[in-house]
Length: 258
Image (cartoon, rainbow, N blue to C red):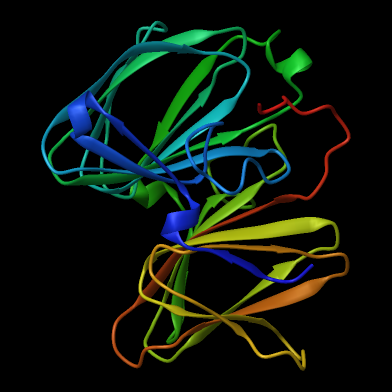
């Protein structure tokens, strides 16, 4: 499959609390304007920002594994499990919503975060007790070289372990530098460029790399083991991407999006 790039105009939009929270949605719900409705078990992905303190009232979830990853600021969380918590910059919270849980959220001013839903086999998930866990930035492993820094959010070595087959990284690439991500056969690599711009190609391939810009969403499904090469096309400034890898197909039925 060729590399697909989806501009902000091709992604969904949403808002909460009278527009105090604004969202760009690489993967949204039906009717929100997202060209992409899901990628394998990656069900939903919202990029939210708040310029002032804002709230989202108590609401229910069931079955899905929901990750909130804070890029900047503070996210306050309360739920019917009795949780009352704060997640700061670089931290994450995970709700495995199981048989059902309700939660409410509050964002401090100038907060930027992601809420991402992963879909396990729901007929099994809804039999499990719901859980809540949270992690600080320092809990996640990081690899730093002269060219890039990679923080593993989900996957080997990371504290977040989901039932859903998935891995996630927060990657920062220096000016003019490159980063290579291995993708096994049968998997899809997705990325959201939250800072900077660059190009996306394959190591050793004859095809020209595909350019992308700030806020673009990039998807690459592979049928054979592949090395994806991401370049920062600027000599100055950092390219930062949130990268998620999931199987292109799973062995269980997925919830239909209408």
